[in-house]
Length: 568
Image 1 (spheres, rainbow, N blue to C red):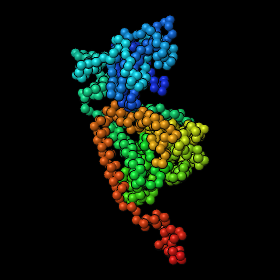
Image 2: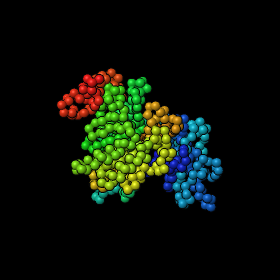
Image 3: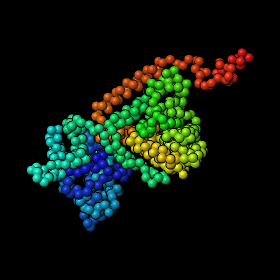
Image 4: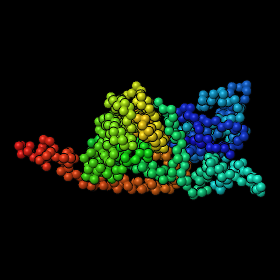
């Protein structure tokens, strides 16, 4: 959320959260730093009406206790997301016992070096911060024009590069190794500041690929887990972003159609969980079977069903993926065994599909998904037992969106560490609000199963923005502030968008074009879902018997065959 740059150093983003709205970071050898650049990374904007108050905490010299002496130096807002502060010769002499960061100082051992400084950022109301005055000498530095700002940043960049200069034997000039340019996070940060500060584009070239960090995993009965970094190409990045944006807009459209009463019956939206289906599908191929519960719209799309066929199925149209006869909970496609309306019932079915794969010696995995609400079902544990007993190639996935219907997981389960509840089955906890983290976890799980080690259990911790179904407002058991906070701080699409821009994998203009294309696709699908033909009444009799009983070609449904009709 926040980042700091000291001239000639790498960007620091390793802020530690010490309270609900307070963050700290230590800058070593700060006595050699004149200015600090603070900026919002853009991954998580500040809440509406809030500002980020920036404080410095210098350690007190002996014999005083090694606590930082805090002073306010300025603030950031969404409207003013960056600032340069002068910190040279700003060590305060007076200790403020009422300072908000006083109780959150680092341990004594971190302050043995009196040259370090601690940065504190406190998210506070704009009105409060606006009335605060920085001490003399710490006011934000300013430049009269964007050109002057750019010149100063480029000077810093040149000075930094010059520090790597070497003179090869026999050469008359010094050279800067290309590795210093291509691998430097500080250089990338300076270029990004120039790019975002006022439209000065240093280079219009985008990277064809980038190495992105995954979020930490938790392991159960595993000696090692997925990689902490992953290579992502620009084409992959575009696809992931488009797929997640499509699922989000499709679900928004479904919610609107339900409110218009164009959709009847049950309707469970997937908004907020898009990184789960998109990240996993990035590793699977269409020969890998998938079976899930009733929150199935997103998975239906990633399994190859067009948006038009998903929305038309919801409105009961013949152009739907199940010819308008399945609805929200019963959508299918090749190797997609659908949503299932009975809580937990799909788990033993998934184990059965994995058994068939092993019996036929197919090199495939079956992904079997269920929610945290189904995790306490007895049939789930029976399926675990058989899968491990026979070492079936099954990836069990608990999509933990924190609430089973209207009950928080802590109120429903004695153990909420769902990734450990396979007991003898290895497990992996995954931050499923990040699509690349999900992708690498799935890659690890698929390799595990295909190597003959048996099943594995993934807990995808995610969050649903809407209620359990459309009949649930979703606010009687959680606050609106909680939902808003998740949208602002943890949204999988917004955070991935910022990651792509920071890594320069995709240009912002292209992302806007993707958004417009998705909007057009979904709008056209909505129109089709409203106007396409409904199923012919004859469809009541289809897909019941694949082969009618011998001698009874008109036999369709037991109890209403032609002889029963004539008898009546």
